[in-house]
Image (cartoon, rainbow, N blue to C red; front, side, top):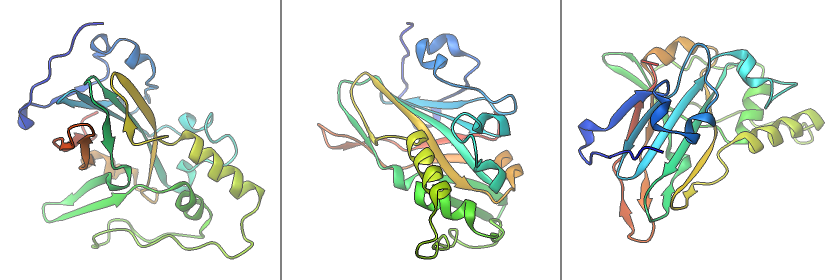
Length: 219
């Protein structure tokens, strides 16, 4: 596999579509590209983060054969963290945001949904407009006690199994999985979307890494 040389300058961070997969070898084969959106990636300081928005309903059938989050307005983003350094990297998955720019003065940051929140978002009767002016989405509506049935449990398990399994990436290894964002069917917001990954630390050195801000709108 060809060696990738990383530039430590933030502005020169690598952003290329996954169609240039010759640089990534076996890593590229793990990516399942949507016919509508290909992957975007950024590399610096020994870490490569790749993101592929699933904008094709057919992409969800394998992971969610019965109840698709996409049909409920939820976007899955397949993310991969490849660590080429000699130190483990810890990523705070809960701090990852999908940022959409509604206009010059209005930016919306969407937090990722936990498997439990995904179930609530899929089963709730309706949602608010995610483009409304607010800093974050309202908390998911709790399911009634005893309201969880076998289908809800199965959906939660599927979301858990398909999600990013851990935020710790060992040296010379890759971790990948899905993150979920409630776009409430307004998938056109992806035209301005960025995946923002703000909290990453080299564990042995306890040294923060520069954030990742991956432009999804150009892919």
